Amino acid sequence: MGARLRICHLYPELLGLYGDGGNLLCLVSRARWRGLEVDVEEASLGDTLPSGRDLYLLGGGQDRQQRAVFADALRTKAGLAEEAARGAVVFAVCAGYQLLGEFYVTAAGEELPGLGLLHATTLAGSPRLIGDVYAEASTPWGGGPLVGFENHGGRTRLGPELSPLARVIAGAGNNGEDGTEGALAGTVFGTYLHGPVLPKNPWLADLLLSLALGRGEPVPLDPLPDREEASAATRARALALARRGRKAPAAPSRPTRRP
Ligand code: GLN
Image (cartoon, rainbow, N blue to C red; front, side, top):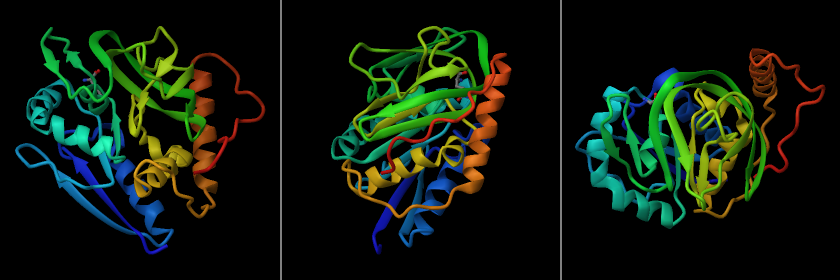
């Protein structure tokens, strides 16, 4: 292909719970397997947000790390919004997802202002929402089954204009009440799913890659075999359904379209 993908991993040492760093490895591997050049850069506390990158990645973290990250990240608010507006992909998990919202009220009652890229708000609640999740995702570019692991106290509510990334079939998702999981606005993606989520859901990893390479307009990617990934996803889906005392449907749904 000969193209170059530039990824910026934000706060990697603070936001990386439950293997979220695997999302970066997954994106890099899937790009390189297709012959793409990949540059990875990290930015953390006090660093200037690198501009002009194709994909910005954020993971999850606990309230303590989140407090430091939220305070620091406000400096990058306008910059990250500009990057997203010109089609860069922003992909964030759990604490990173909460950061992209309007605010997060911690378990201690402290309100941490977010970056406002997603019109969503999060309040810490109890009990924690923990376990395997199976949801069905839908995006303007196709969708598919989405599996992963959640562990969060925060309850996220989406504003009326904001689309969820997926509908929960087994698990809690955004708040355990309205059946939504994650959010999607333009090329800004948020999800509660760890695991890490991208290797278990290669169709989503490829969608992010294809949008990032096309600056918001998906470009076609060569298919990859994904046998191990498919069996990991099937197993994760069965675990999520079993956990909720439900039986797995006979045939797993397939991604509707590959980017
Ligand atoms: N501290 C946040 C919560 O519990 C985020 C947790 C996480 O990133 N796993 O809601």
